[in-house]
Image 1: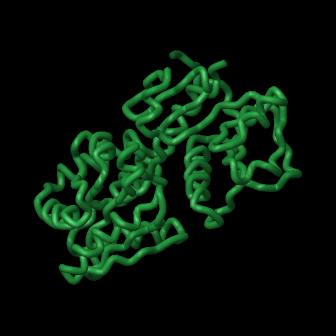
Image 2 (image 1 turned 90 degrees about the vertical axis):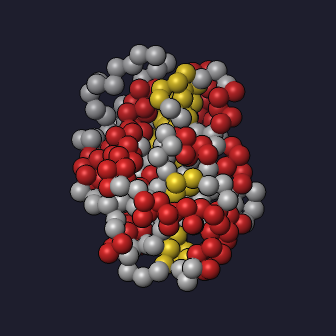
Image 3 (image 1 turned 135 degrees about the horizontal axis):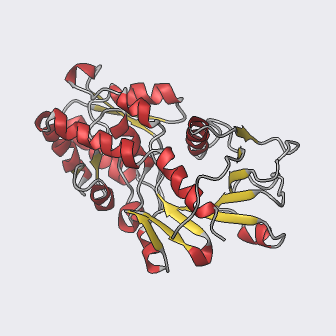
Length: 300
């Protein structure tokens, strides 16, 4: 699948989800940051009066796109949107979906491990990534025991019940932590710098998937963030462990995952941990994700 991604750079408009208004706002934040880093004129807005110049690439999500201008001559990247609304007016669009194993049952073309494109559905499947840029990861030192402020595991993100929730799995980890006088604290809707500080001061920083996510191979952005921030990569998901080519600490039993993390934090060498951090830097930033987007956005 060939595509010219070196064409003249267009304006990028990221529509909706102002920062901290919704969990998806952190994805829009990362896209805005990475497109700007790559030299694109990038606007993040929900102002329906804004001008969308012809040729703009517009990125949005289905909970916030109803007031967004739909302009012929622009190209749209849609996540969980009503596709018929765009098809009915002949708009040029592609669909962005998060990777899960079921995409492999479709007629997809492999771009990279866990990254696929389905031409018939005009859909790109890929995980999210860390919100750090590659140079920022280079500047992020590995965490050692001196970095930990106290015996606290700071969980930055959602803990939820329900079919797609992870509360049972997180509780298993919290029980093991409590057995060792380590407190698990949950933090939501924190700003970027605070999130980094919380992870870097954490005794351990796991990325724990719920049962549905484990079964379906969902890859959470939290694993990429925690590793890029300098912490040990820990997961209860075999798909995540496979994506990291076996370099993470993995156990499907979240209670035992705590003990495995304590062991590996002491056991793994600086070189081993640095290799995992550099793996994220080279493969799993939003710069990488944008490269895939630019490949498929030009395909008719």
